[in-house]
Figure 1 (cartoon, rainbow, N blue to C red):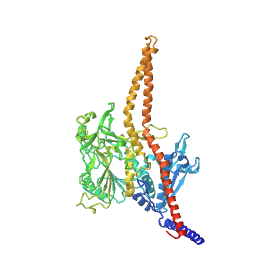
Figure 2 (figure 1 turned 180 degrees about the horizontal axis):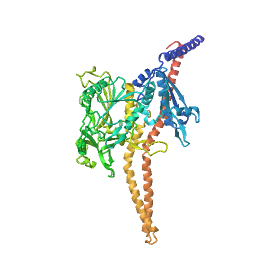
Figure 3 (figure 1 turned 60 degrees about the vertical axis):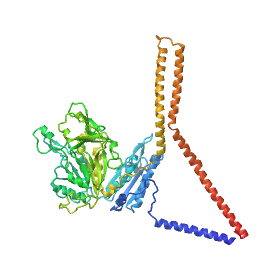
Figure 4 (figure 1 turned 45 degrees about the horizontal axis):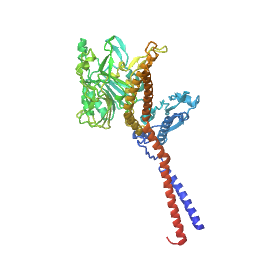
Length: 626
């Protein structure tokens, strides 16, 4: 017996040592391995992000400012903060030492709080006491470069990976991106012969010059230098073939393009010097890029303007005139924007004027994804309708919506062939996939559609104030394209929060079933209260007739009816959540009773089986028979 006990203990010791050895060995062999079992692969890093981490030339320091103690009182914020921290830790693990992460919980009036503000992380007041809450990320590199995400907005949760990857990418760059800018519109300012006054540069271009290295190009170009990261084309018109061939070669080598075309560019000064205003109205103000668009898989009709009854804005055509609805000057809202693309997500309203429409070219090999779309109350207006337009209300004469949502801007990606197969360029097909963002409007860039002068300030000159997000849209597009193919590939991920789909469905069903009954009871209550008020007013009127006993009984009846309707209305409103409460109770029963009971039964079954097995072994040992 003692020998068996010693053998058993020895076997347990060997098993324990073997388990420890396997654990240590697996930790060393499987170091860096991750198994993401979440539904939407929330913790799986995108290939573009892995490439950005792998190509970092030098270490980057990340400082995650996170008021964890304060967030503990807000479950949703705490859950999202934990998600952000774990994601940053995952990036640091995969970077092989290139990302150095520090998690900091700034105490009030501490050096950490001062350092957070210096690095661009902003604290926001939260709670009844206005306690400062920090939830942002700052980064630095070895050359004193710094970037920051001032605050992780839970509403932009789907773009968490993109925002962080963008910050790391920017810190890993040695210089600002180079933007080649080719425009046939007077965006750079200069002298305005019509007013005789100097003309300011368009704000969108002025801001781009602060964010990037902008290199202005002319239609006489024959080559686009290799250091140009993004090429911007604004209202390309009558471009020489040599310039189009240079653009073609830029696209084929994987250059990124941001293109603005227009069927009727309001800011186009026109060709030559027309002698009369009527002659000026007849000038062709459309963009022409048909040859390149055909190669890139984009169909744009330069003689068609989109009118929209839903998004048409009220404007005054002349000073002193009352505002009138203009179905070709559109105020697009969030429902017309692609919320899954980083360029358009989070923006509120975009204003456009006499915008065209885009579609995939027949037989295109590229992927066409709309970024801006009209409503279903849109239709097509010929450019000729705007030649001598005095009254915008006349645009609705004979206008018939088609029920189609027209693409007003799009992202186009994929491999393409040269638009000039017999041209002098060496590339005849894509060396790298095309990355193109195209808008069917140039007027959205003009200041008047999205900026107004702010009130004069004692401390400085009059500033600009945005009343639409046109500028943010352009800068988002530039920022996205300048980030390279790796950053462009990091799109929005699925949301971390998990909505109660079944609860929402139950609520919608209950509202559908009980809403009609609720409205009926409310009408009965209103009618009863009206009759009751009329009878009560007779009682209060000293000059009126004294109420008869029958009228007194009628008042009592109405009072009782009023109480009954109110009680029934309360029951109906409580009934809206009845199914949800029932579901909650069922889940409580399952979680508190059923699941533990199942595990208890399984445990009892295993215990009974083990006792039976041990009894059989003892019987064999005693009798020597199985």
